[in-house]
Image (cartoon, rainbow, N blue to C red; front, side, top):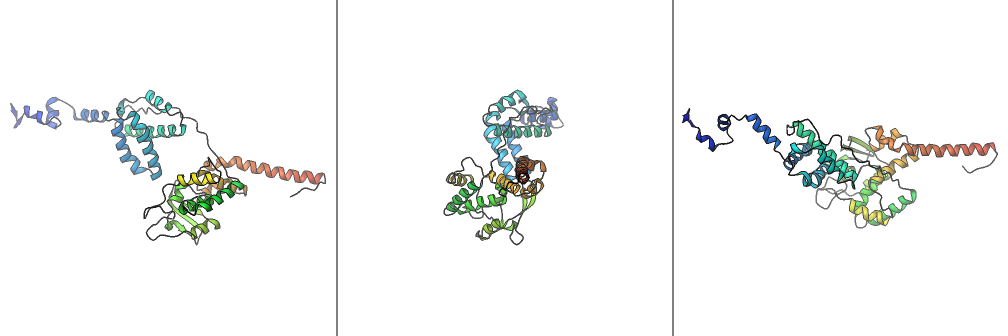
Length: 331
C-alpha cells in the first residue's frame, strides 16, 4: 500500500525521520525530551566546558573548573545519566573527599553549577539541584605574615636564586613589593606598566580592571628588568612570546633556602597588608592597595588593626603612667 507515493514499509529505512514518527504515532517533542534525559554526566560535561566554562569564565577559573570536572566528577559519575543522579549520591561523593575539604567544596560548587545549567538547558526538568542542601566542610583560613627577620632571609634567598632563575626571583620580589595576586604578576605585560606614573594599569584582574600604585622599590625592579622584543610579558617564560607559567616549583626551592617552609606565595600579599597596617594605613586604604572590590574582604585584617591599636594604647598608657609617677621611660 502506498500513500501519496510513499510506501509504509519504506519508513523502516528512515527510523529517525518525520514519516516514521507520523506513522508510529510518536511525538517528536517526546523524542527530543528522551534524548535529553539520556545524556550522561560525561557527555554533559563536554557541553558544560565548551558552552559555559570556556565562554564565561576567566582563564584561571577555567582551569579550576576543568580540574574538578576531569579529575573528580567524570571519573565518578561519567557513565551516570544526568537525570538519575540524586542528592544521596552527591552527599556520598562529597564525603569521599573529606580529607581534602577545600577541593571537596570547590568540586561540589562546580557540580552544582552543572546541575543548574542542566535544568536551564532542559536536561533535567524536575527543577531539583541534587547539590542543594549538601553541607560544605569548614575551611580554616590561613593567615601567615612574614617578620622582619623572615623578610631578610627571603631577600638573601632571592639574591642567590637570581643567578640561575632570574625571572622567578624577579616575579617573587614583585609579589612581595606590590601585594599583587600571583596571576597579576605572572601575566603582567609591558603595555600595562607605566613607570613614569609608577602604576600598573591592569585591564583584567580578579575583580576587574584596576590600577596598582607602585613604590620606588618596585619601580626599580621593573626598570632593571630586560624587555624582549618578541615577548609582551614582563616575567618571560622559556618559549618565545609566553610568560612564566610555573612559579610554585622555584618558590619551593627559594622558601626552603630561606627557612620558610609552609609559606605560600599568597602569604606575601597578606604580609604586604600587614605591613601597611603596621605603618598606620586604615582598612579602606588597604582595600584600595590590594584591589579589593568589597571592604568585607579587607576586614580579615581587622584583628591586626586591633592589635596595633592595643599596642599603641599600651604605649600611651605607660607613658602617662610614668609621667604620673615621675619615672623616665624610653620613647
